[in-house]
Length: 112
Image (cartoon, rainbow, N blue to C red):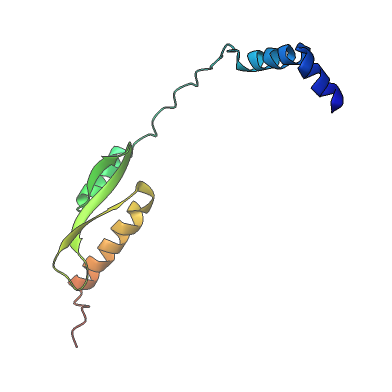
């Protein structure tokens, strides 16, 4: 510790500290590589869009992704809300709607 203090007192240490600080603050050339731009995810096929429209769903693009939306009222209210699903959930929603429609056509309601 005494050696460092002696260097600082003589000025040699001060120039050493200033030199290190100057080197640390010096601007280094910045090399940036440009990443290849990723292609947007492919949209749903025309057959998928047609199937969704036939089921009463409307395709919309949100943040570059196609979702399929519909409006209906939740149980216990008459206020309609907008609900949307992605392409992965689309088949499940369509199957459920078809099952509900078939049950109503067969008279399978909750009537005694």
